[in-house]
Amino acid sequence: MCVETTMLPPRDATGIEVPDEVVEPLGGGGAASGRSPTMSGMTTFAGITEQADLSALSGVTGWFSLSIYILTVIALWRVFEKAGWPGVLAIVPIVNLFILVKIAGFSAWLTLLYIIPIVNLVLSIIVAIRVGRGFGKDGAFSFFLLWIPALQVIGYAIIGFGRATYTKPV
Image (cartoon, rainbow, N blue to C red; front, side):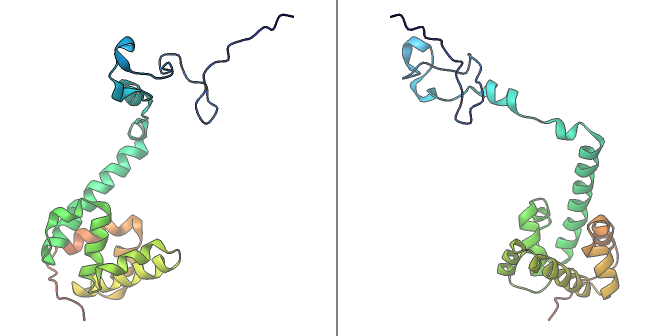
């Protein structure tokens, strides 16, 4: 009785077929393979960069989003400096949220409430109104130009580059 065996293509943990150049023999690495033992079981750096998809910035939407982010950072930089905080903190996305909560007169720990659905909406409106009040703006200005995402860049630019001065809300 003769049993015929066929070799199946190698697959990763999710069941997706893996190209031959990524597959290493069992025990990988070592002098025979030409790789260092620390690289066993890992793909090369070139393999990782080939897999990276950077096409998000190739479209109009990606460049538009990047430009809005840069304009927001510039406006927040000025707002932070007026409030007595280092402007460079506007660049880091989560850190700038902590600083906005501090400018609103709250503890930075309240920023953790942004994780909770519904509560984050209420907190963001309160923070926007308190930041606006700290710069001498009324509630309508704060709601429309500091809370609505499409208009935030305009609102923070008006505060940052305008004549508004900061007084810590109580």
